[in-house]
Length: 136
Image 1 (cartoon, rainbow, N blue to C red):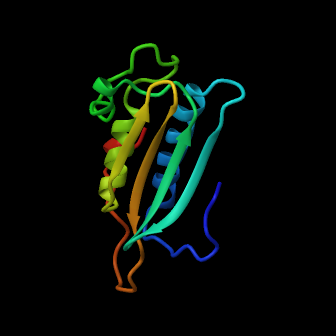
Image 2 (cartoon, rainbow, N blue to C red; image 1 turned 180 degrees about the horizontal axis):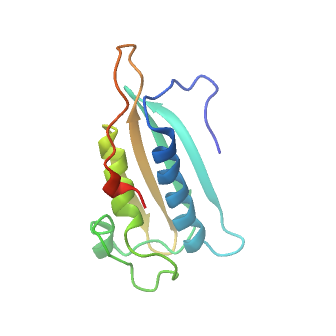
């Protein structure tokens, strides 16, 4: 994990954001062979905190990259173990927090999934509404 010590707080449902990070790390671990690496970083990006999970795994073919957030989509030759819903649920959680979830990948070189969460701006606000359908 790499994060600057002065990282500003975000206004988020901790359990739901943790669910997103765990899903991304689990997927990265499945795609990465022994000797590879998975890294988690957090950094400032404008008025957001950007969280990224990068791996040196198998990568995702270009024609599947745009579809990985659709329900039940599974990348051919990807390691077994998922239902094809984790990224869909993660995207909904991130969007419910006012952020975005994106993916970059190159086959044979790995993938990076990044999501943003707005920084607390000092105004009083209520916790983001995360519908029960996004909970697994």
